[in-house]
Amino acid sequence: MGVAKAALEAATRYIARDLGPKGIRVNAISAGAMRTLSLAGISGGRGMIAQGRAMSAMKEDTSMEGVAGCALWLCSDLGLSTTGEIIHVDAGFHMMGLAADEEG
Image (cartoon, rainbow, N blue to C red; front, side, top):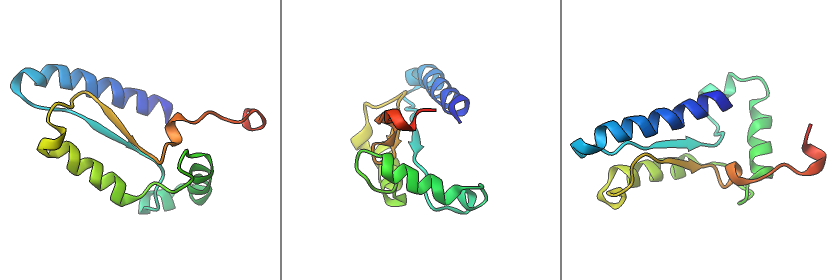
């Protein structure tokens, strides 16, 4: 997943740079694991959600409403000067480090 997320970040920045002069904003949302049909197809998907909750800064699941709210903000005039960004909507999971006993 790390390679895919790095590619998303790079592509978002390059496209934002290319389309910015035309007044087009380009951003992406990096969401945490959520209960979706695609997650149900992943072996250990439920464990991913539990682990994400346990390791997130807010100690909660990523909500679909939170992801939708971020998308609405980015598409509205409230996000007017925001471009080239990856917005993490994952209850703070992306910024947390691993505890020493969890490193492998």
